Length: 210
Image (cartoon, rainbow, N blue to C red; front, side, top):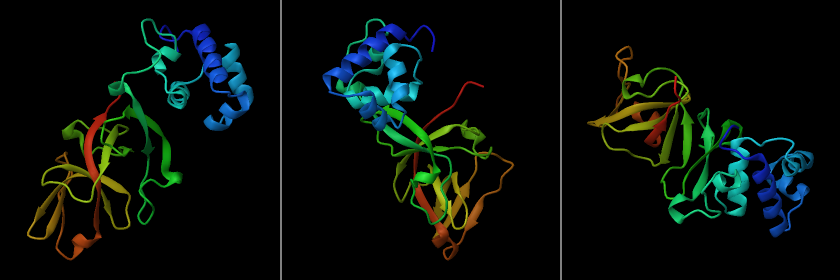
């Protein structure tokens, strides 16, 4: 994990937290859905956990994950503004299934506690490149049934997976507009619009360095 992770300090601090909370390798392993032997190896410093595991441990004990990792100058407890919550990363949303069905969740993302988002959608395709949203990016979605004209939303079209498009309403019709001139507008008249379901509004996105 590199210079930002101090294996010895992590080992000591994890053992301290477990002792203070009467946790064993078995109880913590059950919470994290990990083998107790893996937890034991964390406490001896023989292996390093991945970042999502560190974040999950920090969340369980209410501590600063940077402190847990042994980073210099970090306090044990975070200020309220720095506290985080966990939201699911959804790779696919299928028609008729619950929005956050377990079988479609590919991971979790940690965001500030006061950030009003409900899940992340993994982008597929290149239809939104004009908005700098590329394939593989994570788009943070706030669940809501309507959006303002021109806002980007996650939309479910009957019989298809969720799509990310700008949404416009005009005289009862719905227009789904891509941010890529290679894609034509998809226009649904008043009758066809019943097949369109707004899942939520896109609030922000995260893109990896490419």
